Structures are given as structure tokens and as C-alpha cells.
Length: 249
Length: 261
Image (cartoon, rainbow over all chains, first blue to last red; front, top):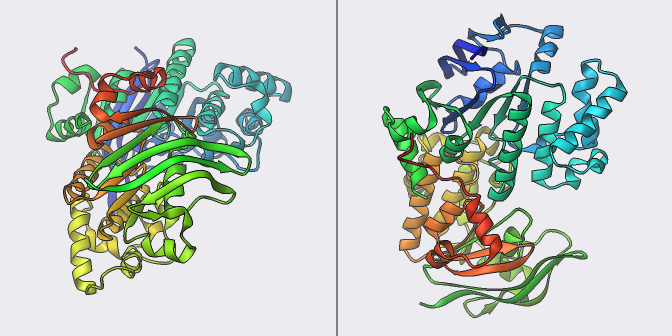
């Protein structure tokens, strides 16, 4: 498979503490990669660096072979066309005083897509995300958290990205809504051959949803492998600990 | 075992909207009741009603809520304040939002304990550090001196759990106590809460983590759209769910699969 994203020796520190330490991995087109680890293990920091929401201290990020580690201004906006992110708390990720439709349109308008084409795409996305079309004129507080997360997915897909990063995007949802959301994401991934990076602390969910799992601890990758293989034959103590903790209930 | 909480035919509404209807439940001393159900099913409202903390526009329309032989719905604000934090403890869903931003965790702790038996600050601090260590907090001393905004969501959640445990209530209401935690921290929190239960603390736990509810609770109550759809012994409900909604809920739970490659 073609490598779409490559992260090489990535590092990031906050107050002299390394949040991400020498992290390297590759993601192929159409692949769903899960990143698992406890709070503070550096998962979200990596996601933010890939999306260019944070600068890396060291290392490089390549998108389709092009180094995007330090791109700024116009080139940075260009990245948003290809990489999008869905956050944990959908209500906080939307402007509270803007209608959902306006937020979904914003990315497309920034990409200079005509108003008419952008609106057509917005309605297509609402439909694809199984939301009634009239939700375009609703405010975030007027919809449920599950519906709001669907709108966040619609917003992320608006610019037709090749990579979508989900940062604990289903962890605030109850299990039935979570399942609906994962079914939807699977369907969209297959339909558009999307690449997903799925950050979660739920190992069971990642085993079911992802093609490959990366386990992180204290800013480093401690283990990487195919989901079933990794869960059946973990090689590090930390992975074993994670599996045991997930097995408690 | 003696009855600690009894809610009988309770209906609650927010303004014109009925959010809980005909609710009946009981919790005995040392017992854990888990309430599960989708968002908006009225789970958190039950806790708020029992604690006398319904949001603006919220009202218990009918029914009774008894803590031991005290009719909670007839208490004055002052009387309620006296039993909250001493007899009735709580771990709020939005722990960070429940803290005052200009007070450290340690200050919150002393304030929360001001109603109970007076103990020296040194002793309180030592005990708090012990509990924080059980909750997988590495630098407990610095943690206590931190302001809520300096801590992550998971850290604030553990601060709220520590304070609730330190209050030593007879009945602890926990609203999604592990929602901001990773699995390893969840395990520490559950172990700590189960230790409290072995000391006869009863709990009402609201969660959307079905696995956690199954592990912790003696009784499970499944809610949908403000109504009980199933209520009984955890083992019975989980292994032989009768209601179609309970079945859907259980089928949606992701589980680790071993032995397939």
C-alpha cells in the first residue's frame, strides 16, 4: 500500500518535559491506525502536530512524501484540505453562536469553493452523516451530543480530506451512539477510501475498528502491530497492563 | 441490611418537559446501584434530585425520596446543606466545573471537610495523599497545591473522587466517575471505590460504561427516555436481559477479543 503519512523522530517538550519523544511511524492510504495509551502519553500532541496545530521541536512529518513539518500561512491552510481532525467534545469544538451549517461551510469557503458548490456539499454531508437537512440552521446547543459529533464529522469531511484524525471522538458518547458512529465512520471510510488515525484509550474499541494499533507510553511508542496479534501476544509489560485493565470489566 | 435510599414513584420535570417518570429504586447500606442508559435518559437528573441540586426549572413533580427516615423533599436549604457532604457525598460529572478556579485542591478539601469531624490539617493532608496514591496520582503533594485549571480533566476527576472519599459519606452519588480517565487510571479508581464499599459505603453510580457498572454494581437499573426499562440483580440483568433496549445496549459494548488472529 502507498504511504500517505510518515512521521519521523518527532519530538515535543512542554516545560522541559518531553511529551513526545522520538516517535516514528507510517500510515498507508486507506488504513485505520489506532493510537492507544494512558492520559499524558502524547497521543493528542502527535495529532495536533500532524494537523499543524502545534509545532514540532524536532523530527519531520511527510504528507504524500512532502515535508509539512514547518509549513505556514497559505501552505498551512493547504494542509487542512488534506488532514482534518475530530475532537473529543463536539459541543466545545463548534462556535456556540454559529449555526452548524455555517461551521461546516467555513472550511470550504476558506478553500475558495463557491458558495453554491459548498452548500450542495454541506447538504450531501449532512445526509451522509445521517442528520436531517434542517440541522444546518441549528446551533450546537440545540442538538444532542451524538448529533453534534455527526456534524463534526461532516465538517471534517467537507474539504474532502485524505486523512481524518479522531482524538477520543467517541469516548464522550454512550455505547449505542458510539456504535452508530463507528458504523458510519466505517461506511464513509470504505466509500471514499479515507485514512483514519483513531486515538482512544479504549483498547476493545480499537481492536474492533482499526487495522493496526500503536501503543504509547510517556511520549514513546512501546509497541505496534496488528490488533488481534498485539492483544493475543503483547510483548511489553505496559501493553499487558493495558489489556488486563481493559479486561477488568 | 438497612435501607439508605428509597425513591418511590418519583417524576421529575424541567419546565414543561418530563425527564423522569415513575421512578422506584432502593439502595441498602454497603450496596452499589449502577444506572445505565443513553445520554438524555434522565440518569444524572436522578442524582441531582436526590441531592436537591436540580438545575433551574427542575422540579420533583410527584413521589418521595427518603434517606434513611428523612424525607429529602421536605428539607429546607439549610438542612439539605447539612447532610450533603456528610451523609450524602457526590462526585460530579463535570469535576473541573464544580471547583472554584481560584482555590487549590487542598483548599477545596479543607472546605469540604469543614462540616464534619474536625481533624488536624496535617492528618487530613496525609490521608489525602494516601488516597491520591491509590488513585494513581504520582506527585500527590504538588497535586494538592495545584489549582483546577492547572490539572487535566482526568486529574480534576480524581481530585473530586478523593474529596468525596475523604468526606466518608454513608451514600455516595457518582456521576460518570471514570469518564475522563484512561483504562489504567479507571482500574485504580474502581479499586479505591470498591475499598470504600467494603467499609460499608453505599453508592449510586451513573455511567455509560456498561462493563464498569457490571463489575461494580450489585443492582443494575437500565433507563430509557426517563423510564426504567429493567431493574434487578446485576448478574441476572446482564446474563438474561429481558428488555429489547437492554439487549441493544449490551450488544453495543465493545469487548476485547482474545484467541483470534
